[in-house]
Length: 616
Image (cartoon, rainbow, N blue to C red; front, side):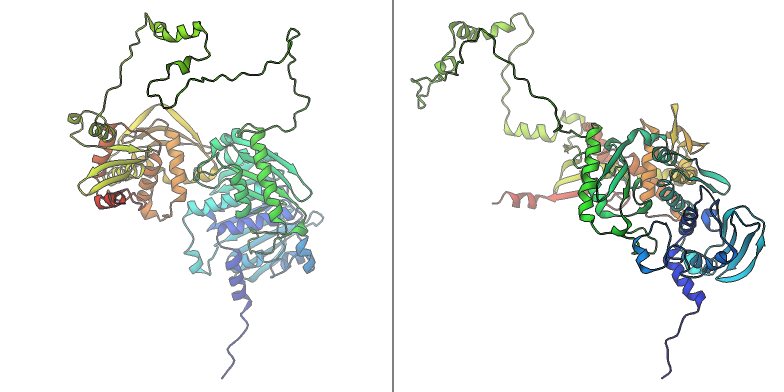
């Protein structure tokens, strides 16, 4: 039998390695921008076309490379960051493996122009599919410029798994945020299809966060700062009232590197315990600085997961630091244990001769078996004037309109009717309903008791209304008396720009005002909107978490997200007329049993189950 094990060609091995490091265009942006940081760049410019499918161009003013270094940089495991295994535990640079450029060159058309400050001319290298096409001298600026064209051109299976341009651009923006936040001293610009997305000047950490996420976040930031012998923790956390229903503004950085760490995330969330509902997430931007020897970065190809030697000791430091910062800013009640000075106890007046101990008075004639009311017990020990006043207390109300009436006697049946049905029978056609905990609606049916989730019921009603509007293309817009201005971060702005045509067909009147700002002049007539900007923000939150991303399903996705964003919230008290109207509209729907995302709307408790609960 012949041998069957053989070495893979370098081109195939590089493509396999690229599958681990380069997952989408955002991965290319991350690796090349990190290389620019390691090169000492103070200005980095990123241009992408078609969300990185067609072109990714990254230019920096770093130290540049010599002709030999430029060629060696594309070889696998070629790096200037480490020389021995011990260096893995003293890493202070963003990259160190030497796999990024080799992986990118294996699945794209790459052009590199680089020049060192002391050199007269630079170097141009053109590589396609790991094959060097050209290497020659070229006139170029100091620093390095990469052009990545036609990503995954030779791996069509990987290319077809890329999402839409909006989704891929959102991932690119996320990577830029993760790099820009810990390095506010670096000027970073991002352009998509020649339109500016970010133009971030040099700033401090707070200003950089505001530039990335909008001016609205500035008022929610609470400063965090604590230094221990094990770790230094600083940064910002958000006030609870600005928490959102979805994650997206939660960042941990260790020695300037973005990481994901579920264990430390729990430390922050527990600091907000009893301040937030279970489904809300506060924003936080926390920077950890520790000795590189205490962490292991080399555990994941993308280097976003890190092992800590003493994570069990760091957890309470993060928790206590966040909790203390919230307390100092009056977000949570705090106790001051560092009170200075003594407690002043007032001295008795000079005329005070001696201390009088309290006297306990008892009624020796009290008989607990006496059936008569103990009239003397309540008055025992009182002066004659007090006893006289107690007998004339009703005189206080002479001349007023107050009239004391005995409470009416209710029969048991009338009490039940009052609980199940508040209002005259002729007004509600004899239907009996009850709102429980301002969350569920209870109504008797032939087989038992029906329980309806009021929020999910309203979602189903609105969803079917929106779908009818989208199918008929009948726009019923209600103009706002005062148009509202909505300022978004670039990621949300890109999403809203993509779905504006569908929103217009639903009855929204939204215009792009430029610089991530939108003007809302009208809303769908089927909605009772008090704050149009809040509805649009909720819509974006729901849209981002929706699993559907296909363009063909866009209208259904918009209708589903808008129905969830516009439905009445739990805790809303409904009048009897509103409850009856909600039930009638629910059962007029095509699918009343389930919400738009497939969750149960109603449940019937059979009479037999109710009877069983009383059988014991």
